[in-house]
Image 1 (cartoon, one colour):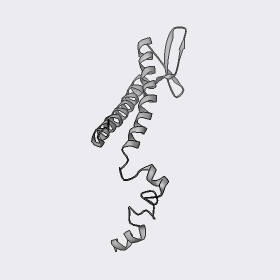
Image 2: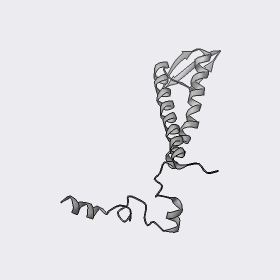
Image 3: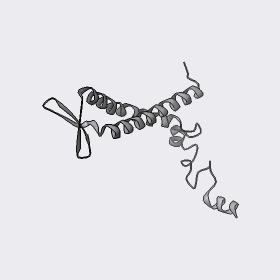
Image 4: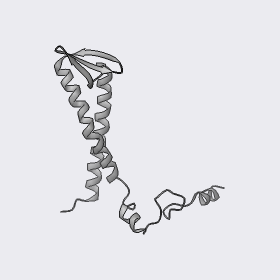
Length: 125
């Protein structure tokens, strides 16, 4: 079974959006609470979030939540990288570069897909 390119594009868009929203929410909550649990500590039954060198005491529930949310970034960030890789234009494929069928990487001065810088300057004059 093959998935349509448009479906893959939509899945990648959702994955990228999820990763960006997750990161932004994490940053907002971390700044609001005064730190995050991965660098925080637990001492004598007290839970502390850490931001730089400052510790903020929170409940066990908040500590567990911020720890889980911080760990979720380790899932969504690589997911975003993979999704961004799938969003590359269909003309640019690694196999073509290995075989040498398409010339240089898109965007380089000697790429057959884009005009050279000298030709662009000539056209602008």
